[in-house]
Amino acid sequence: MGICASTQCLKEGGRVVNGSSTVKIVHLDGKLQELRNPVKASHILSKNPNCFLCPSESMFVAMDATQVPKEEELQLGQIYFLMPDSHSKTCVHLPSRPV
Image (tube, rainbow, N blue to C red; front, side, top):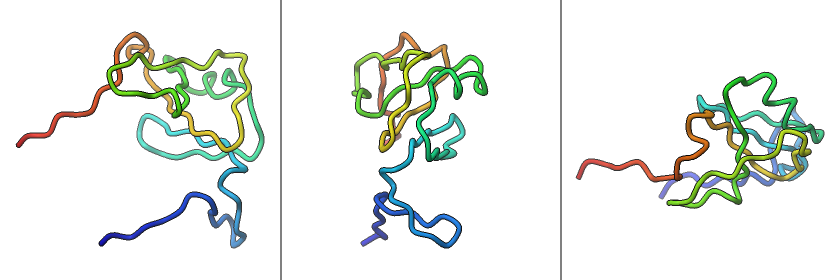
């Protein structure tokens, strides 16, 4: 068995924080950024040129990644992925593994 962890509660500065009370952004390098307050997508995108945001709930294998409009407010409790603009018209796919 492995270690199981819940994202519902996270420790921050010695305090327990409800995980659904943050906006979560997964960066290209895999880093997780959490924001306590909702922000517009344009705020995140201004710091990440040549990228777009994709909400996790709209990511399905063999379907195009959905882009969050720049003026949309990112919602607390949601996970968003930063994706390179070059992937804006490509289908989400699983990496192939050698057998």
